[in-house]
Amino acid sequence: MGGTSTIIKTFPLAGTKEGVISVSHLEEPYGKGSNSVVSIGISLKGDVQNPDWKAHIPYENLDDLIDALKSAKEKYQG
Image (cartoon, rainbow, N blue to C red):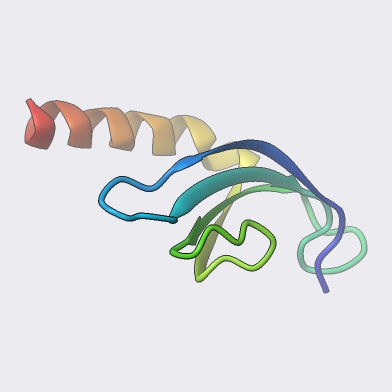
């Protein structure tokens, strides 16, 4: 399971010394023929290849996710 992964961007995880957030394109994450996803990984020790947590977001859900993140930022970060 899990196909080719291409890192799109990495950036430091706020509040940590070595932590990093990575955003990747992942092809066939659930086996041959499965749809590609965006993978968001969080590594506390900076290991983007083996994140401590990750979430796979289907491309069809990206606009909704972006809207939700913008709403969270506006409401709670001010």
